[in-house]
Length: 120
Image (cartoon, rainbow, N blue to C red; front, side, top):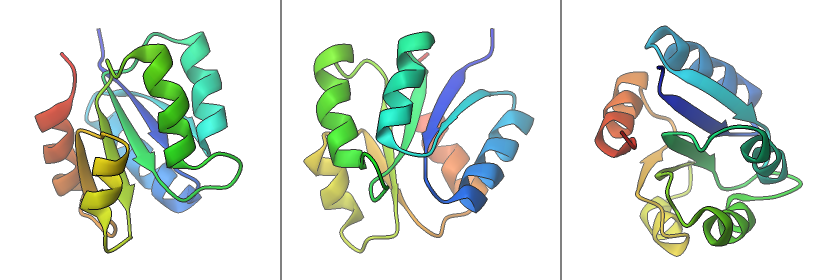
């Protein structure tokens, strides 16, 4: 069975590129353009092996998503924050994420981060 990744990202270019890359790497990928849409996806599917989470998004940002996700799912899916912010490590720490990757990133860097944290 394929491992699944939920990508929560409002930049459609990044969303498309990362989705295409991960599908080519053998992952099943769910996409959400904001935290609210991500929570709706989680209601309909099994918990993914990993969540890639942008922080600054319309409708529901990464902080709000995390504050609603963790009490419901008890952090059983690792979260990697994807952000262009200079304080990326602090943002990841703020939401108790497992890791972070700064934008722009290479797809190889992203894959290495996923392999490090994905739930088996």
